[in-house]
Each structure stands twice: as C-alpha cells, then as structure tokens.
Image 1 (cartoon, rainbow, N blue to C red):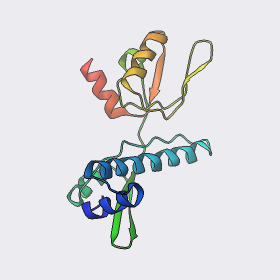
Image 2: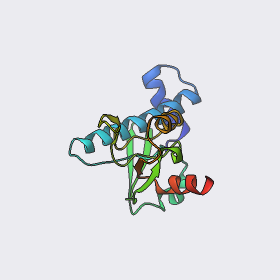
Image 3: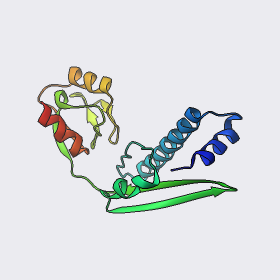
Image 4: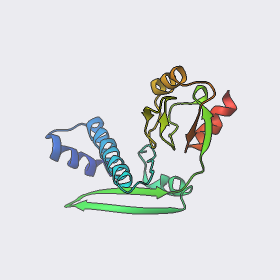
Length: 161
C-alpha cells in the first residue's frame, strides 16, 4: 500500500515524470520481483514455495486481506516523506490431484510434471496460464494426474466441470 503522493514520488525517482498508471505498474512489478526472489531463495534450499498474485490494497482492505493467513507481517519502508507498506501473509495448503483436462489458469503445480519418457515439462511452483493448461491437456495422457497446491481454485474447476 502506498499513498498516491508516495507512489508517484517513487516512480518519478526511477522514470523522471510518471503518471498514475506507470506508478501503479511499478508497484505491481516491485511485488512480482520480490515474490520471484523469495521463490528462488526457497528453491535453493529444496523447498517448494508458491507466491500468490499481488493485490493492490487500501488501508481499509488490510484486515480482510490478512484474515486467511495464519502468519502475517506488515513491512513499512520510508524514504524522506515517501512510504510504502507491504503486507505479507503465509499459510500452508493441502495438495490435490487433477487430470490435465481439469487444469485452469491460476492453479499452481505442487510437484514437477514429467512426460512418460521422463522429460521435465513443468517445475513445481509454476502458476499455470491458460495456454499452458491447453498445452498440457494436449500433451499428457488422460490418465496422468498433476498435483496442485491451489485447492480453492482446483475445487472451483472441479465444481464447474
């Protein structure tokens, strides 16, 4: 979370002049870079970690956003009069298994996916895109199941099918 003035000041430091859309894009990219670095750090110690999609939030959203997380932290970064608050929540989720035909965009692969010949197709921790779901449905046998760590999204896909 960042006040508009703070966000604009941060964007102007990096880009010179910056409109609100550029400033909001910068905030999203900072979140994505942070989550990517965290994921890489966990892979270095052989731990599977999947970051959620970043969300823009207001102070009023804070309680609602953090409610599902068993552990959470607020981080406040200040430089001069500019400030940026980052809300981070952590939780564990059980895995489920689905066939490739049942995969939906946004689901997260919990275990590496291999072809019948043993070639690696998808690394654990990968968030599925629509095109990746379509490709897996074409390439994998109907009997092969994929372990996912997104039970809410997977349950919704099963209910919709």
